Image 1 (cartoon, rainbow, N blue to C red):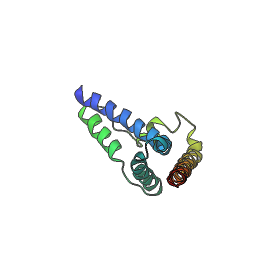
Image 2: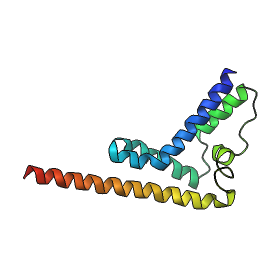
Image 3: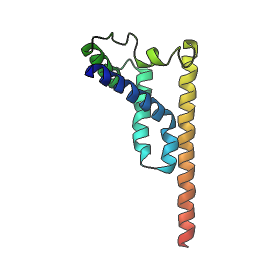
Image 4: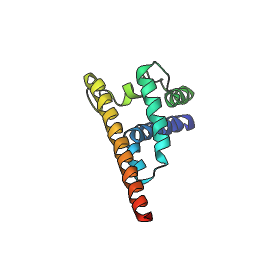
Length: 126
């Protein structure tokens, strides 16, 4: 029972990590230090897309599911909970591109905001 609850908690955390991947750059507009975590998350996401790397959260969920006597995720977290559920499986590549574009827009906005803030601070000092 405890292992199952922890497996479900890991699943919820995993969803949170994916949401952070999409919106973290925008959060950095308000809290600039968040950008460091978001850069790390985006780098990890890119590595997972480009190479067959195992996600530690998926591994942990599978271990906890085993301990609870539940079946392991057959195809990984995204394939189990997102592909074919939130969008058709045939749109997976398009969704990856859209997420990458959203992240790039958030980073561009972060850069422009910081540049404008620094310019304003420089003018205020004159």
